[in-house]
Image (cartoon, rainbow, N blue to C red):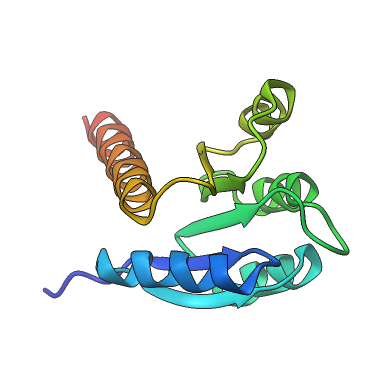
Length: 138
């Protein structure tokens, strides 16, 4: 049986960030199912594509990332959402994690650091899912 590629939605209002993240995600063997330019579009694409992972900018036009995160969690709280931010404000990061984000990544990292952070986050998430499923089966 062939393994299905992880399906990823990227939401960021900066085109160069979306392009970089898209290149990284595909280099990791995942499929980019959509690229949203604002929070409203991100939520619409989330509902349309049901991605496994959402890379979500905090500061976006129309609807901010934290509001989108909360709406995604209300739909499916097992979705892997990773917040993208250029700010390292502890209160904002705490709000994201408390609202259901699995992790956050600073956008000013190098491409290699971004790749490593996305890959490690996906690996940790999949390990947790396997552990939960194993416990549920026993």
